[in-house]
Length: 389
Image 1 (tube, rainbow, N blue to C red):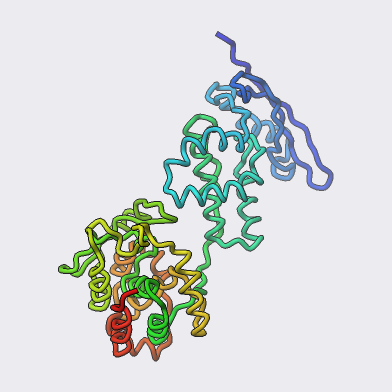
Image 2: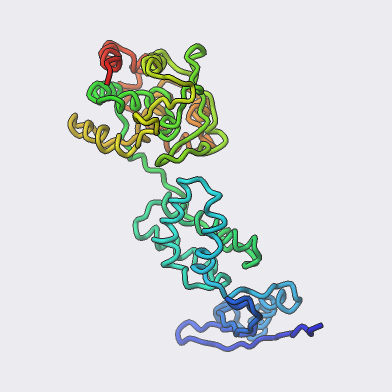
């Protein structure tokens, strides 16, 4: 049995204006080829102002070396983050994620994480380095949501490294982001603007837009909807899937699997569309070959050009979901009801992001989403909707 080597380490001061204590010691490591090696570590354990005497500094160093000297600390790998991601994480872990998440994480790794940490050895990616990276991205005007996604992706990778014993723990867990400031900058259409937009849109963009406003579905949920999940008799539809770039997957969260009641107008739109259905497994919206419609094509070829032509705010499919949420709020729906209908994991998401205030004169006119949106002009839309493409 190899005798374990007890180390006291060494200390020295460094710096001119603000002096710091630098500690050094030897540590066993696993080289890239799997063999054991030995490297010398050197870190700053504190400032001289914090640790005024050598005795205090030695005590801090002893605490740092406690696990190493007790034999509890495993030899650390020399592998870099880039090597681990390319040889282990991408082939093994990435394929287990949803398709949309895979694409998102690939982009984040290539554009942000590998440039920042790719050449770091896994044990050398510290909490401080990660925290500085996150704050730097925020200062570079990336949104809070984007930086949150960067943090999640890095945590996913380093979490796998921890599970496979390449790391003692995941340093991302010790990092924090500033409190999120919710900015209600997304455009919300008034009911009269919704009418104008629906009348002007061509099919199938019109029916897609109408159902998003009337049901609050996510665009991926609507484009993945099949007739077997629509019950015209019970006036409900069931959300069981989502689609992204032709790839079907489970809905975003457990709460996203839900049953949505259909109002008279939404039921009317689906009834007209159902006349063209041939099989319960058919998609409600599909190409001639039966493939799901492309959300980007519908957006860039129809929705946004129509908004521009009408002088309306630049809209996205998700903004129409926001419209539905805000109209539910205006109709007096309780927060829990809105959360359930939208399939949110928490009421905080519903309250902070989706419920937008509307002018008082509009609020007084709102007695319910259907009452707002079903009027004389909807008859015109229904007539246009029923015309064949």
